[in-house]
Amino acid sequence: MQTKNIKTIFLKELKDTLRDRRTMIFAFLMPVLMMPVIMIGILKLQVSAVSDIRKEKQVVVVEGFDRLPAELQARFESHDSLTIKLSTEYPGEDLKQEVTSGRIPVFMSVPERFSQSLDLESQTDIEVYYDGAEDRSSVAYEKIRRVLTNHREGVVTSRVLKRNLPEELLTPYNILDIDLAPPAKQGARFFAMLIPYFIVLTCFLGAMSPATDLGAGEKERGTIETLLVAPATRGEFVIGKYMVVLLTSVSAGILSLTSMALSFKYFANSKEFIDLKNMMNVQIGFESIALILMVVLPLAGIFAAITLAVSIFAKSAKEAQGYLGMLNFMLVFPAFVSMIPGMKISMQTALIPVINTSLIIKSVLSEPDAINWGLVLVAFFATFAVAAACLVFCKKWFEREEVLFRM
Image (cartoon, rainbow, N blue to C red; front, side, top):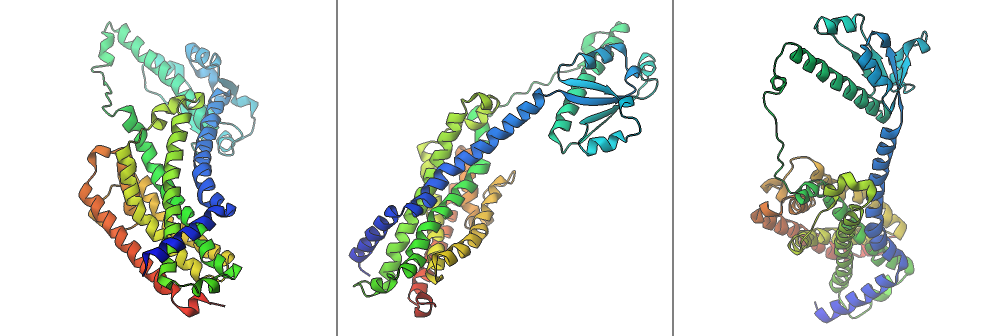
């Protein structure tokens, strides 16, 4: 196997790949630009929608509103984002069913002699019915609960003062929340759960399009026979093509990470995301990028070999895309493990490709000072071994006439 032939094939295939507009769009433009846009766009829509709902005036239907103390009635009536309606305005209707059907956000039932029970210092209840699966109902419930809680605390305080007891009796001690995690680490926790999946996905997408063109595309164009009569072995052809697919896969993953990091940093200063600033303002150092590249490289090698082997087998680019679409789910889905709370790299998971890469990236972003380098090396060599085996299989696959000229 001659290095000169491999280099020539690599440069030729790389030039053709860079000239192919469709391949560049699917390998780089979509993963690098669309992923951050989609993720930030969805988050922005969610924040905007919740903010709009909180500003709305939610309707609260109350049964027995006149049974509430005058002070509590005034609190509800003066609330700037609640509209109180009496149950008598809905004659003959099941108000609980109205809540579950979404026609009214919240129904509150005040028991008889509620005010008298408060005066007698007897415990009583107020029933508040809402639909926790519906945003407007949940927001309305939060507002009502806040009003009731404030009133209840006032009742308790007045009872204590009536007995000439110190008000401090209500709070025997204070709980001081002191979060030792810096803002960057708090943000990294959320960031680290999502980014591994997107890096793995973009690595696969970066390999998928050029592999399809370098294998099945050659068959469609009728140039596969011309390549085979060139003064190079089939193994040299495979390695040259493989290196191009590997390069695009790694490039897509790294560019995706950079693009998302810059997107989060930019939107962290946006007015819509002011409450999420700490979550989105994440710093990634050179050491972190180097380690991520280290673990992504052998994983991209697996993706490059598998996608190229499938493309070589397929009769056409359309058939190859169908096969690779199914493989996309099978190979990328394990990266979801990074979204499992408390899931960390272990000796068992370090031996499983995709899962080990996802968990290491999560660790790099969330706990850069607590990286287990022993497990990182185990994961690297385990993934590298699988990548080497996939490359050998791809080479053997390319040397089989019944595969190469499959009709």
